[in-house]
Image (tube, rainbow, N blue to C red; front, side, top):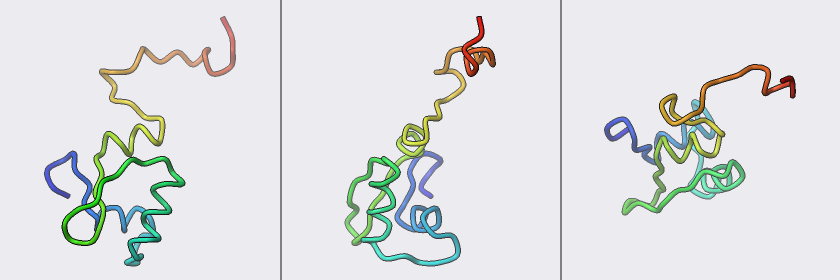
Length: 77
């Protein structure tokens, strides 16, 4: 990983299929199916960001989110 915000192709391979080294097409399909936005790198792979991964997962930074209210999950007021 470059810094703490960029996910290189190797990082995405590991997330896609831990312990394996899936091909580019496999990682692309996984990212597309998961809704992860990515760009192509100059080395025959793709890269993304932790923000793109979090957005695809529906996760936001604590300082960006509204306060958590468990009653919202169950429609209680």
